[in-house]
Amino acid sequence: MTQKIFIDGEHGTTGLQIRARLAERNDIEIISVPAERRKDRDARAEFLNAADIAILCLPDDAAKESVALIANDTTRVIDASTAHRTADDWTYGFAEMDRDQAGHIASARWVANPGCWPQGPIAMLRPLVSTGLVPADYPVTVSGISGYSGGGRTMIEAYEAKGENAVGFMPYGLTLKHKHVPELRLYAGLLQDPIMQPAVGNFAQGMITVVPLQLSQLPRVPKGADLHAAIADHYAAIKNSAVEVAPFEIVERLPELQPEEYNDTNRMKLHVFANDDRAQALLVAVYDNLGKGASGAAVQNLDLMLGLGA
Ligand SMILES: NC(=O)C1=CN([C@@H]2O[C@H](COP(=O)(O)OP(=O)(O)OC[C@H]3O[C@@H](n4cnc5c(N)ncnc54)[C@H](OP(=O)(O)O)[C@@H]3O)[C@@H](O)[C@H]2O)C=CC1
Ligand SMILES: CC(=O)N[C@@H](CCC(=O)OP(=O)(O)O)C(=O)O
Image (tube, rainbow, N blue to C red; front, side):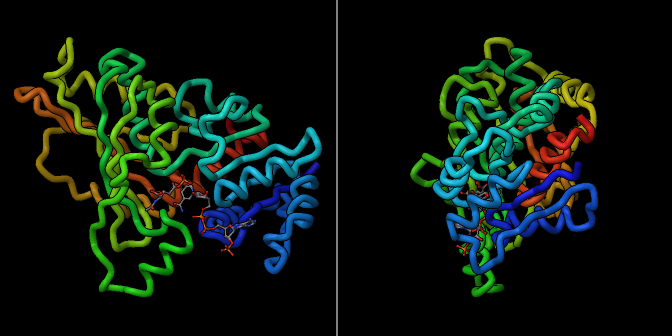
């Protein structure tokens, strides 16, 4: 039977992108609340309970409300918000995280789609921590830059109103309690909170995340090639991986290291740069905050839950 899919928050940034990615699909039926009733609890409850799979593209509080409105034991959920990412009973929707994660997502009832900022750092750190090359107690710092669509409709409107006069590079997260710290710590396998130092730029979408490593501080100092091999080995073993690993090379600049490189795709490219003489390394991930960082991952998870490609 054709599965019914309901996108709660269909008219927001992530919802519209998921809708567009599903537009040509005839293997599923999209059921929609009329736009003027999108915040009507009764209408949402009706559609949430009629859906086989509901995709929540809502602020955290509204996402929690949607889950509470589900009165049956059949509707399955993909939540794009931060609300459930570290919650018990929820499966983290990063399919490439472990060899069996796609299978876990395929059979899960509750799937929490990852945040855009943590995905790149988790993709790079998890294989290093799990193989012991980076100790779990290493003090990780993450920086990078995201397009302004990462801030949803409000930020998009603010940037587009200013056009070329909008600030080109705006660091934020200055209270050091970015909402993505808990999931980054948990799924990277870290024993202490990483510092997250995000920035937003005057471009719509795409992002780069960077993790610098002072290898000289480690009890056993790995070479850059060792870090690269551990990450490359991990992704070589993942079926249908949207995450790719660039060849290990010593270069000063790389043209494809620009945040918009993989826009409108579900791709993520990981790079390892290192200077073994100085015992320092940089891990860099390039991806689309609206692609693998949000709607691309949501559709990837939807396909897994529909039994396609696990
Ligand atoms: N943008 C991104 O790069 C990413 C976003 N996310 C997450 O996805 C979720 C959606 O974000 P995004 O699409 O950017 O946000 P937007 O603000 O663009 O869209 C949110 C949508 O939800 C609607 N909405 C708000 N409150 C309610 C409610 N109580 N009931 C029903 N609908 C409601 C909004 O309507 P209205 O506009 O009328 O208020 C809007 O259509 C958030 O949790 C966000 O953190 C996750 C990864 C990346
Ligand atoms: C540029 C910008 O403001 N980005 C948002 C992250 C967007 C995102 O991924 O939010 P979720 O946690 O819902 O996944 C931020 O840093 O808060």
